Structures are given as structure tokens and as C-alpha cells.
Image 1 (cartoon, rainbow, N blue to C red):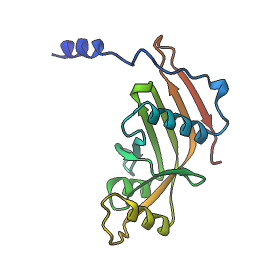
Image 2: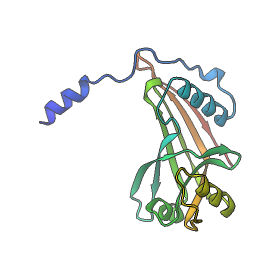
Image 3: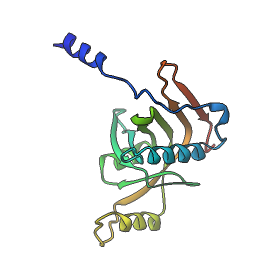
Image 4: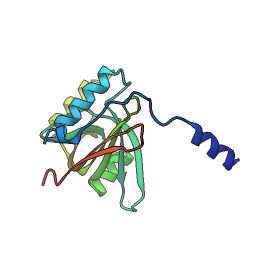
Length: 175
């Protein structure tokens, strides 16, 4: 069975044939600017939920966990997402306030990795985020927390049909 599965997996196509090109020499100095450009291109290409990303955290036992979330904003505070502080991710972020985000846009053969320290944003910002949720309960949720990843590293990855994939990395961000 394993050999059959391996052959089936190997036969699957990797990426579409008409991938965009990316020249790191033309990249802006601010990774947020490049991310917003790529996000706009994903929207234009019709990528479904281009603001969705995988968030990986690690609790006190050192065991990683990952789940899908939605980017709420990107500003001077960092790359924002929200969750209940009482959830597994909320508890893990309290124990170890570092995380990795990964955006993946298959149709464009692109991914963006963001790694950094996670900070809690203000109670007012968290309450506003709770109130703006679709079909939100109008009752305030004191456990709801708006977080921001303040990146130390952001990597942009562009797939290439010849498998010479392009990586462009920003390091030593947010001090």
C-alpha cells in the first residue's frame, strides 16, 4: 500500500504551468509592502481566502501545534490575528509568546513565512475585533484577544516550473 500511495503522490502535479515571476532585486525594503503586493495579486488571481494562514505555536512541553486562522490587519503593531486566551493557542502563546505564520497561495506558487514574537494588543482593540466579527455576539467577550506577530524573519517563496524556486528573506526585524 505504501508503494502505491507513494507512486500516486509522486504523479500529482506540483504547480500550475503559468506561475508569476519574482525578482528579489526589485523587492521593497519593507516586507509588509511586498506582502500587501502579493496579497493584492492573490486577490486579483481569484485565490480563495488569501488572508488565511497556518499559525504554529509551541507550548511549555515543546510540542508544536498548528491551525488555520485569518489575518486581521497588518500595521506598525505587526501581523494581527485573534483568538480566545483560553484556547489551546492562547494558552501556548502565554507560555511561549513566539509563533510562525505561513500563507500559501497554490495558484500563484507562492508562500510567505512570518516568524516572531507575539504580543497582546489592547483590550479596546480586542473588544473592537470581537464586535466586528461576522455574526458576532454583541455581548463583549473578555477572553477574546487580538494578537500581533512582530516578525524577526519574513521569507517570500516563489515556485518555479524548473524547480529553481526563489526565496527572499528579511531578517532582524522588530529588533
